[in-house]
Amino acid sequence: MLGTMSGMEIKENLRGKRIAVGLSGGVDSSVAALLLRQAGYDVFALFMQNWHDITGTLHGECEWEEDRKVAEMVARRIGIPFEFIDLSDTYRHQVVDYMFSEYAKGRTPNPDVMCNSRIKFDAFLKAARDLGADYVATGHYCRKDVTEGPDGEPVYRILAGADGNKDQSYFLCQLTQEQLAPALFPIGDIVKPEVRRLAREAGLPSAEKKDSQGICFVGKVDLPVFLQQKLAAREGNVVEIFRDFYSRIREEYPGYASGIASAPDSEDITALRPDEVRMLAKAYHYRECDGKKIGTHIGAQYYTIGQRKGLNIGGHREPIFILDTSVATNTIYVGEGHGHPGLMRKALRILPEEVHWIRTDLSMAPGEVRRYLVRIRYRQPLQKAALYCLEDGMYIVFEEHQRGITPGQFAVWYAPEDLEMLGSGVISE
Image (cartoon, rainbow, N blue to C red; front, side, top):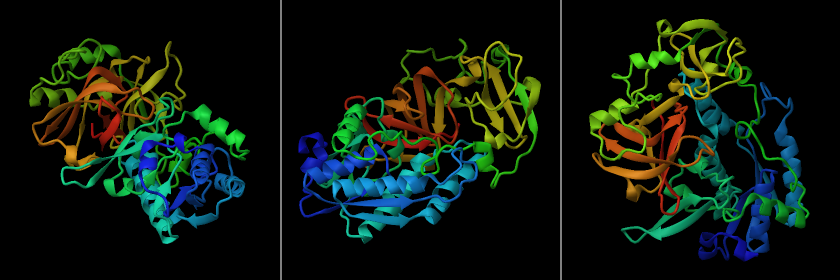
C-alpha cells in the first residue's frame, strides 16, 4: 500500500512522527487517512467545525453534524483516534468576513483559497501541533515534492494532481514554504475512481458520499440571501451592452475580442512593449449611456462577471451574461450570447502587493518576462501565457482571449515542464 502514496511522502522520514489527518467526513480525506494508517504511521483524525449558521444554505440544516458522524465512523473503522476542534470564530473572521468585504467592493472572492491558507494550513495546523502532530495530511488532489535551494535548504514544491479532472492545486495557490513543509497529500498520485474503490474495499462509511459543493465548510448557498446578512439589498438597473459597442472603443481598449485586438491570438506574446501590455490589460468600466436599460436587479454586490443565472430577464434569443458590475452606481451590465466580446479579454493585471510566490527562489524581477501556463479559475484548462513583471504590477498576457476575467479571483501560474504551481495573485482588472 505504501506504493500508492506520493514520492515525497515516502522520501520524508515519517517514522516516529505523528500525523494529523484533516478528516472531513468525505471520501478523499478518509482514503488519505486509510493509506497513512496502512503504511504503519502514527495517525490520528482531527475534525474541525467551522460554521454554525444556516442562513442562506440550500440544505436548510447544519451539514457539519452529519459530516462529523461520518468522520467518527471512518476513524473507528480505520482504527485511529478521533479529535474535534471548533474553529468557527477564526473561520468567520478570516474567511467569511473576507467574503463580505470583497463582495462589498464589487469583487468576486474565492473562499476556498482563503480557507486553505488561513484555516487548514494555519489555524488547523497550529491546533494539530498542539495535539502533538508533526505533519498534517489532507485529501487534496495534488502532489508535493522537495528540491534543494541555492542555500542548501529544502524547497517544497506543489505539483498538479495525477487526476486531471480533480486537480485541486489551484486552491493551495496562496500557501507558503512554511505551510508546505509539514503538509502531506497522500492521494495526489491517485485518480478519483481509485479512491472510491479503495474506500469501498475498506468498507469506509464515506465510500459513496457525494463530493461537497459550494462554499468551503458552509456548503451550497443562495448567495444573495447569504450576503444579505451584512450587505443590504438595493434595487438597481440592468443595462444591456450590444456587440457593436466595441468597434467604438477598440483604439483605447484593444484587449477585447471580436476581431478588434491589436495583438492577435498566437502572436509572440513575449515581445510586447510595457505600454502595449498595460493597454491590453486595461479593463473598460461601462456607463449606463453605453447601452440600454432592460430590467432591474436586487444589488450589484450579489452578481459576478460571467454569471448567467439569477437575472430573470427574458426576450433574448440567446442567454444573457453579466459583463461587469458597478457597486458605486449599483448597476450591472449584461450582454447576449456565450461569446459576447465583453466577456473576452486578452490580459489582466495583478497589483504588486497581491503577487504571491510559492517558489520565492524563482520570483521575477521588474522588467522580466516569462512563459507559464495559467488558469484563472478552478478546473479551467491551463492556458499559455506570458507574465510581465513591471513596476506597477504583474501582467499576464494570454495567447488566446480568456472568457470572464473576474477581479477578486486568483490567477495561478504553473511551470510548463512538470506542472509545478509556482505562484498566484488576485486579479485586479
